[in-house]
Length: 163
Image (tube, rainbow, N blue to C red; front, side):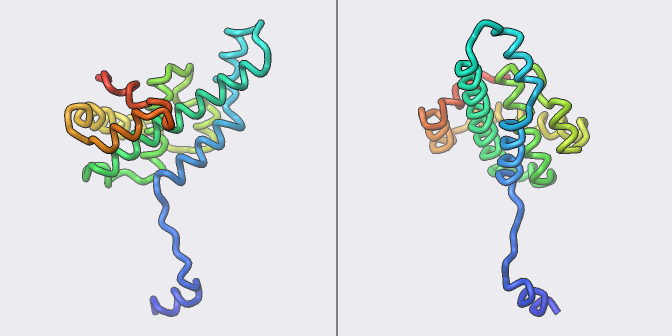
């Protein structure tokens, strides 16, 4: 029976990963996150449009890199398997935006597109923050070196003294 299904599918199977969900969330933020854009516009009324666009691109890139670092830490920990990939990605973005001091860590726009309950995101985020604290004490040389590089905007330094 299973072989028939696989043959009909031409063996084209896909497993979802947190990175796929992260890509979708970041793409959405890049195109639609009105709340942070309004905050920046209010703060910098006299700045020109190019400066604002550069700020927004930098914020999105930092959010992406920081969320990728966080997701990479979740791959190492067995207890994180209980959370679906979508919840881990949402939690990583939530934590990233909190650390980057965005006005809304999980905005109304994001809630409408990714209907994950706040409680679920927060419980996963709590476990991830515990994981970050453990990772700061452990010796994950390659992961730390990777996210300390300029290519990843040195996002490792953001969580280095995290508690």
